[in-house]
Length: 502
Image (tube, rainbow, N blue to C red; front, side, top):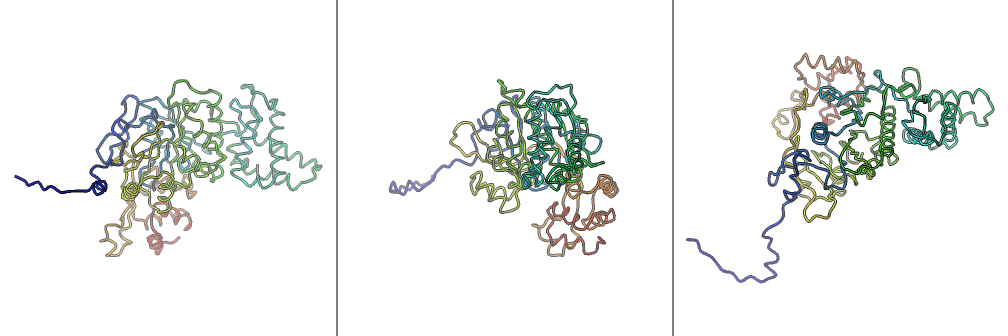
């Protein structure tokens, strides 16, 4: 029989004792939703509650996903899109910066649109818009991508030439266009400006020539991906199931950003033309993965979609390794944020200050492995529980083919014994392909590298991979950027290149 000891305790002492505290996790009724109207995400860490996501009780259906390379961002995106398609018949348009999703979209029965590999987008296409509005959008894109804002005269010349080109093609600037009338192209705008140069009457010829030069960068022979008749009907993208707009073969970041901006502009206008929906849902999701150039600029239509998309049943998913790449207007307005493994202190500081989660959550994030995540949700109504919680595991679809890059031969004995040092990196084929695209390695070279890796059973040491890349003409600077993208330290990268002829 146990003894019970009675103490006299003052009320002020009793008040200091915390007998029960609510754990950092919403009640089950907010986590486990109707399975016919929600999608399975994962299992919570505290109580092992299945977490099924639905837009119904949130401020909006938009999502931000942050985490280092290899933490599971792209697999989470794929899993989410597939399940949203099953439950809500949701369409998806992936603006695929580095070609990371095209293999998966193909195997999933979706449609891949590959710009610079047979597909073209005419940025002068109206898609039902008034020419006056499209002209303003085109100029906004050039303001984001070039320095035209610093040259008011060139800016004026450009917008006037675009508007005049529409007039010359039989359009009325302020009228809804005849869908049967063919739109002019950027080459027509350039021809109009060149004609003005030939006339020799313009008082600032240098300004005129520079305006032409800026536009010609996007209309050169062989790089006129946006200055030819479109092969893509953007109006149908939002109702075409799973669509991957592959930008990886475009020459550089400016071309990719121009394509992305044009698509976002067209989707925004389609939303507005169709009008607000009476029955709420998610008809279409737009995915921006590592598209920092347009996710970070306040003039981008990605911000407008975040602010207005809910009433048109449009959702936006923005994913990035660097949360500071996402414009504050996007990041602060999304209804759900998934935080996977975050490595750098300044990124963690940014997330914690933005979302105001506890130090407990911060410590949990720092210990995450692949497929673990903290989730922050913004509910429509005021709640009396923490809105940020931890998932022990995200239940994802199986990954595609993976490749392993080892560094064991570069480590000394102490480093080999150190369990905190990662001895290898395993990465999906589509993610590895994306790393090559980021350093501007050509498609043929990438395919040849993969053939050599396949011949080695998809297992290779970092130095051997660097040697293959060198033999294929990849510069040392590009190779260093590649290995940094795989989260190798500068010390390891230095050792990689010690005996490599680059």
